[in-house]
Length: 164
Image (cartoon, rainbow, N blue to C red; front, top):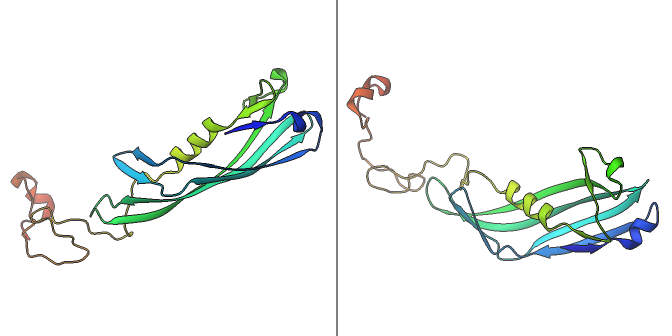
């Protein structure tokens, strides 16, 4: 997402509203696939403040995935805020500030980082998901099975209190 910032650079206090979309399609992250049926919205503003630019806003999108424990479909919302400072003067830029080069600002890297860092590490259909039976494979959220789920390694039986 590229932005022409020449009008904001010249005028202290100038504000440039930002609005756009990113179409990620399907992303794979930590063994999960996240499908975005519609584009991820990017909203924000760029403001000139005393020789620096302040870039603030948010990204938001809806995804579908599958529960890590039972495999049921899951819908979720990806949402993240950003607040960055940019400067054309490398000497006036501290570790919390990004240096500008030219009159075009490309925030694609920032948006991609926000999307990837906002995806959940573990996807669950519900907080108390019971998962699948390790013996018969039934979904324990929907069915109660009578499978014996004792310890697999008899050497560990002392920790589990024996077979169920």
